[in-house]
Image (cartoon, rainbow, N blue to C red; front, side, top):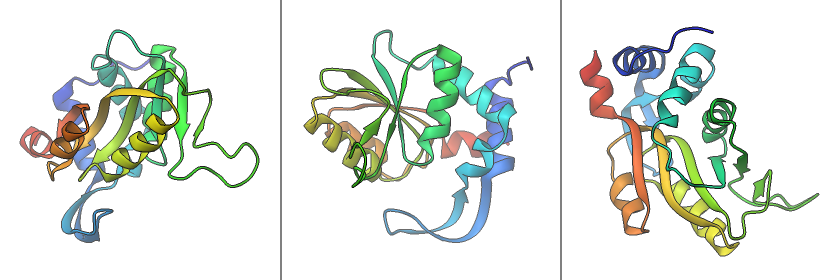
Length: 178
């Protein structure tokens, strides 16, 4: 097994792999001139493995499931699940309209403590939507962990919902690591 990158090495690897410039419309509707293409770092096993190893240290002592959000949070949550040997749920943006018609695949959420896993957070809108729907199904959610916080209001929005928000890196930390 490869040696894990330290946090500075990982920050540089993520930045060099995934930071792109141009004009990008974010989920929030904001137009940005910089973007972190999460799929570029999630597609690299050595980076994803190091992310999982470092994110594992951010997990609370007690929880029932990791909950990866569609679509970018799923690879991170899966890698983290393999590293920690913890069960993972795959959370859709909307419950599917056929088959089991579930919002979260992989287990029953009622009465279970979930840790939300996401890749990049801007406004936190996708997380807030998912948390609202999961809580309506009886899930207990107090912790959100992401790889990159773009520092664009996500922390404040999530904390207003009573969520503890912990990014592995902020956008500023990635820029400073260069």
